[in-house]
Amino acid sequence: MESEYMCPLLNRIIDDAYCYEINNVVYGLIKPEILEDKINREEAREICDNCKYNQMK
Image (cartoon, rainbow, N blue to C red):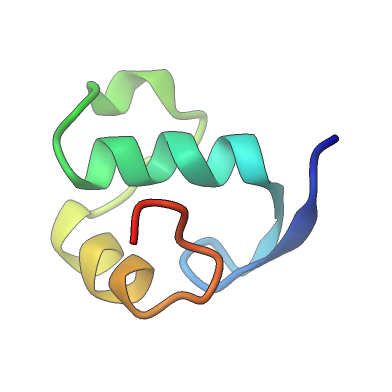
């Protein structure tokens, strides 16, 4: 079952699977090309590190 919530990085509702993909890109585990959104990794890391929905913490 997927959860949805407001992503502070993208300023829109995303599901937990997409959040996990974003975090994998932020931490350099997968290539950014898999995302449908273009993100700045430095900015994303700061936001994601402080996000209560971050599944990588």
